[in-house]
Image (tube, rainbow, N blue to C red; front, side, top):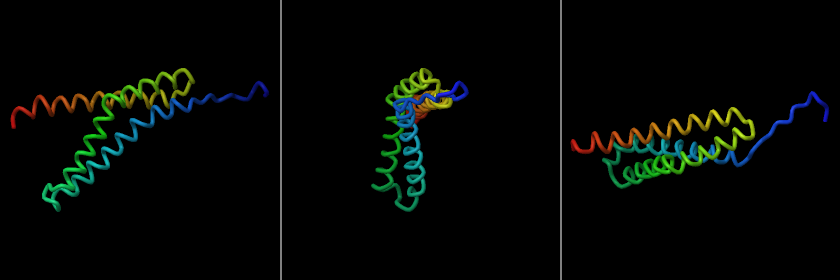
Length: 114
């Protein structure tokens, strides 16, 4: 190799650890949108309930396990000098924490008023 060629380091586990939470979040959004579309035609029936439960399940997996995977992927990406994936990890951890705050608001603020 000559001196002008830059060796690009890649870390496949960092990419995997950072894409798993992203997939869970995206699946949760897709299920939630499908549930919102099916809410009126099914009169909140069984199909609607299962799809909304799948959305909340995906978001539940995105909270704690997703944040842990994002932290692991972030540090592996930082070690491999993959700045784009490191920034993606920061964004994923921030969204996991925002999702946790939204869950706490739903449980502790809106829940008791019902």
